[in-house]
Image 1: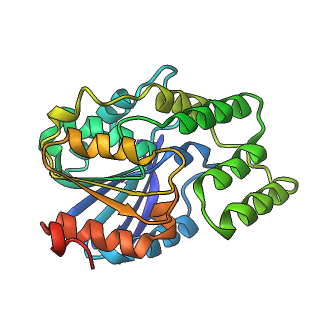
Image 2 (image 1 turned 45 degrees about the vertical axis):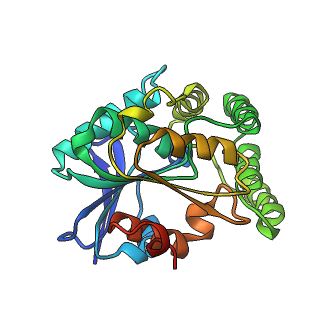
Length: 277
């Protein structure tokens, strides 16, 4: 099994796990990518290997945004850079998973670079943020501007998790923040990324997405309420909606095994009764 990681062109973090001889699976992570404090590590690679163990026969690439993102960059601009990565690494056509902000970018990738995307899974993502999600992202941008990283990280746990974790995780993060430096590698990238999320609205590009698309999210997602998810599903010609009861925005982690199973079956062509276990 591959366990590779590093920086592409010295500026873009990546992780590669699974089977290097398998079909490519390209993963665009969420806004947390901008919060990374250091260089890619073996420990994170091992975590991702376990997280994507359900698709270990695929050549899985988890690729972050470039460090020092130009101010004013949109999710569409970021999609263009991802297209360059896919082309340079010879990964197309790839099945693509976009998580949260990565799903915003993946929509533009599928619309503008259709030859590069075979099938698409939008995980905890939609055409645009819901009202509560917009306010949360604005608050995070303010906290980032003030350098209040522990407070921001704690609130991210509070808004993303459900159940006991929603209460316990923020406390643990706040406690850790009293001892550890949670300062990201490039603080400005956090502000640019959050601004791009606030400005994202892909309703006018959904008609251009030809790839079969799975919209998968929790029905307790604070950022993307069900009407936004259905808006996304209804705007794409060949789309399927998978709602996870009781799951929040951290679906990709909290329900990793079940989610990966559904994504895998979808990418393998199953629909309807064949999609769900």
